[in-house]
Length: 366
Ligand SMILES: CSC[C@@H](O)[C@@H](O)C(=O)COP(=O)(O)O
Image (cartoon, rainbow, N blue to C red; front, top):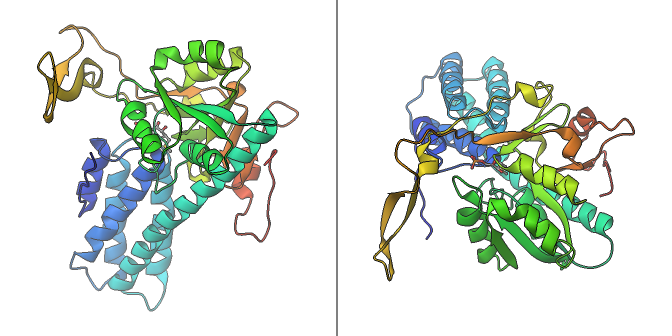
């Protein structure tokens, strides 16, 4: 079932993010930025440029409080604040022109995210096929990193889309991604929608999949998204990512992180500095689904049912941090960043690389 929620204000955007009606690091940033753009268009604004600037800054600061782990939102807020400050300082500026500059910059973020994802898909697919050699390959992914988590196309799912459109994909495997089931609800939906050959597994089946079917299915890589990549390459992503990286290393399967550079945070030096969001225990102890009368499912009646003993204590971190040492490459829109001879990632180089065609970069094998 597809349903669209309408967002008219920064407050609507904040709630859509906090309540996870929109989620995924890049999508959170874009929805936040656009929610304020919509509000600006329907608000009677002051003619005074500085007053409008102050209004926008206050709303951006509020939006950033919606969820802590994904850095894209803080990054977008910082960039938009800069754009707005520049507009307010221009001699001829007035309130309306400051608001228009904001709205144009927010709309451009949407456009840029889609093209960045397509470039990520292309670089990731090239790296994987070059590393795996002749023939089609399979890939395992976690959580949802597709059109429902970004402005469109997706990051890790963009790599899968790119492999599929090149005729290089044998099969995509996706985890259920407990406790919120982004894999079975969202990734599986996107894979079925795009008619990509795909198989759903529970999170606990990943090691068995690599051991029992890795060879036969030619599972060349586990590719995941990211909510924040620290300067040393440590990566915060959906809970369960870390254990996938451990099992990938044990089974000799490549482990790749696919993320636009808006997800790379050079201010955060390593994973220990990343704040991990803890969510309500009810996400684990209850599940939503159609009413079941013992024989048939009644899809017209969705109900929430308890799947755990009442009273049990629950720990529900939404993300974990995968140490850089377990990551083989970070796929960005300018190329795949590999470790240098010292065994470390140099993400500064990727952040400085240009993607406007003036100074093409090739990082890694892509
Ligand atoms: C391209 S999205 C990358 C990550 O944001 C994604 O894998 C993820 O962890 C999303 O978490 P969520 O809690 O659903 O917002």
